[in-house]
Every structure is written in structure tokens, then in C-alpha cells.
Image (cartoon, rainbow, N blue to C red; front, side):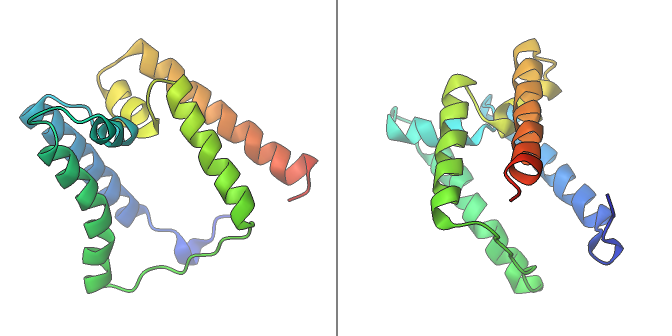
Length: 144
């Protein structure tokens, strides 16, 4: 494995990780809610009174943040090497995994592990192993 040193961004990555952690901590401290994207979005599909505004604000931030970045710097180039059909199947499998895992990587991996949740540790290990196996199969077995 080679590191592309011209695109290696440890400081920007550290800053991004700190902002994610700070956002998750603030949501937990201010609202008592876990910053799991699938749960936040799912809560809008079956809304409860007084529970909509913070969910909409949180999700809106996910769309506004790249626009704020774009105002300061150019977006890095995106390169997608697979077909839209494969991306759609992958997205459906991720959605299915969040249902089976009772949450997504942000809820379990960021928030659950920070709370020392054994369930989140197991879920995150399963996410990671599934990702490793998928990459191996796609690159070395199927040759993609």
C-alpha cells in the first residue's frame, strides 16, 4: 500500500474528526440525543410533536456544511469508478445493515463507542469486518 503524500491531509482530517466529535457531544449534552444519522432521519418519517425542529436542523447542517466549505475553498475532485446501479445496490445494502444493526456507523461508531456501549462496539466491529471483506472480494475476487 502506498500513501499519496500530495493528498495526505492529517490536520484537516483531525479537524474534521474533532468537529464531528464536538457536534455529537453537543447534541448529547444539549438534547440528550445520539447523533446517529439513520435514527435522526428515521425520526422524521414518524414524527413526534416537539421532535422535528432539531432533526431538520441537524440534517440541514449536513447539506449546508459542504456549501460553507465551498465558500472558502474548492471542493476536492470526486471520482466514482462504479456504475450507478452498483452504487444503488450498495446504498440499499447499507440501509439494510442499519436496520439489522439498529443504527448506523455514526450512531454506533462515533457515539456508541464514546459511551463505551458493548452493543456499539460489536456493531462497529461488524461494520468494519463487512467493509474489509467487501473491498477484498470486489478487488481481488471479482477483479473490480
